[in-house]
Image (cartoon, rainbow, N blue to C red; front, side):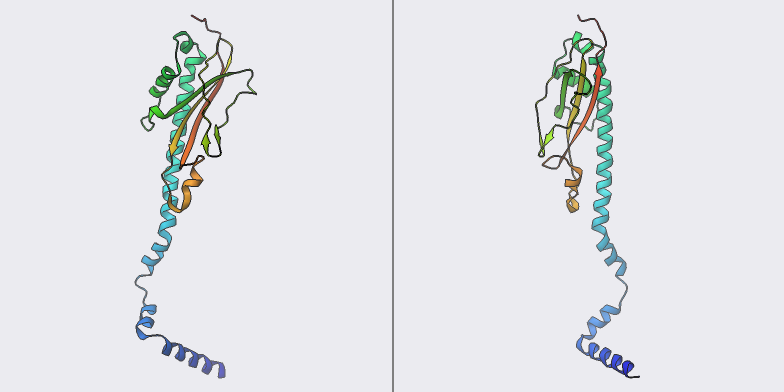
Amino acid sequence: MFPAIAKSIAAGARRLCWPPALLKLLRREEGTAALEFAIVAAPFLALLFAIMESALMFLAGQTLQTAAANSSRLILTGQAQNQGYSQSSFQQSVCGALASIFDCSRILIDVRTSTNFCSANTSLPVSNGQLQNNFTYSPGNPGDIVVVRLMYQWPVFVSLLGLSNALSNMSGSKNLLMASAAFRNEPYQPQ
């Protein structure tokens, strides 16, 4: 009996301390859905945009890989060597294989020979968030092992809740997309 009396006295005391308008507002439930959505909206939208950004990056990466495979056939078969391709002319053939989501002037190309497949460099040329640009164009001779690397600095747009750092591997909210192909040149006839 005494605990019930104590509870009712405490409830009455609490009611006396709070203004009646505030008590009326606390009992209303009309805006709860809007308030709950406001709490959940920012993380939901950040996740949604991060998923779309990731999907677009995967599409761009696959497009770049396809372009690397198709354009490296020019070196593999000796067409690039026999026609005297320079790095810029090889870049133009790469651009012909790319979709319009890429800015062709920003494609980076590294073509170099290697002594064996184990020592072929196919790593990402990023150190401390900066691109290590020591690229060369050396398509090799018949029977040489060649590594073709195509790179593109993809801008990351999602910045809600700091997700741009999770989606980028370079400073400045950029992700270096890289596609590579390692092969042995066919025994073509040099011209």
